[in-house]
Length: 517
Image (cartoon, rainbow, N blue to C red; front, side, top):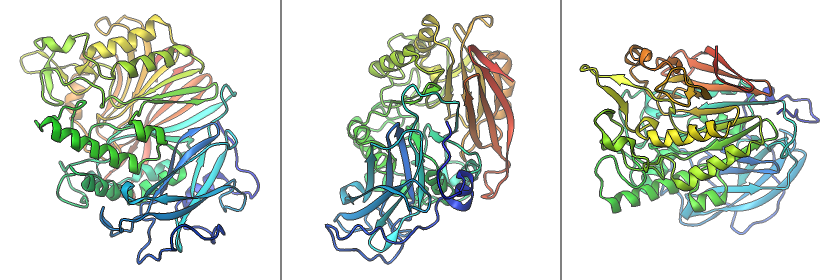
């Protein structure tokens, strides 16, 4: 999946390493507007630019008018006209599209530009302007045409980026990876504070209102390494729990909030998230976050939402360790993680089988992970797929029954690296492996109990590799004959200039499910 830029001799790698988020060119020459040209006392594009949800003929561009000092009440209740251009070159000389949009006050002065009619499988560059200010220049791309022969896809998987726990050096290293896109599977922000505080949120108070969630998103978006990664690559995004509240399930709070109050809180959190992500209008309007992205004949990425539709936790209020042997509710076949409509959509997409690799990008660890307490009882984590074993059985049973080849699941949430064989029957170690799983560690969020997990590995032979000691990301290089995953780990997430290295490398062979070292 490679298409070198034409014309001026700059390479994609030069563009990224020189800094996608450098300030841009002279005025666009689009003439007057609906509003008087504003003059800002401070730079209004302090949150950067982003792109996402690419298709074969377009993508979504995003920015928000906000200064470095602004909060949710910064700008007056009026709209701002924002001009934008899209070009075939990074110097923005070969302009292929331009226009204007209104950054409305009721949308936090965010602007989403949804484009179509562009050439497939091509890189583009873009920029915004408001008044006398120009945004950073961003770079994005379209997908290959449906069914087109694609030789390679390279992506990074990110999740769990607690601002207070560390810096985003992982995103700085992604800039040198020559990626096609970034997939973020949740916990983009954290609504509250816990653990170490290497740096501080914009407020000591947790986010629970629309203004609070907007300010929290702005705090994260101002990180320079995160901004550069957004400006360098298109992103596919979905949410997990901390975008709203830790361990919530559907409309059920994990902390006993009354249902009406929690429903209002969730609605506010969802609105702020949609305002700050490069999402298409239909996703923002319907809050349907599960969607599919096809990369020609090479790969189809099924991006899921395992928060909005899930059943309440079994035998627990939140993501606690529960006794799998005594929780009768745990095994109920009616309990769902994805909801009926999303499950049917996923089953149909996987069964269609029109790509070499069938990717399921979702929030957490799909494989079971059993721990033993001091009395020897088996315990599992209520908030993950272990808390919804019937949902996992439905997913993997469908893959096995339909003999769907080359299914690879990607996840985050657990702040650790995993490489797993996904079995038709996990109770039988000799059962057939029907799919492969890779989980990336957190970008910055504090890790789990590495030593305790290592002690339990012998209870989980399907887990082929585990490491919870480092922060970083998962890098995947996908070709027709093989899939390669690298555990890319930072030396120290509390150091903004930390080095990174590939700790382990794993492969999946075309037509052969399971992890190959």
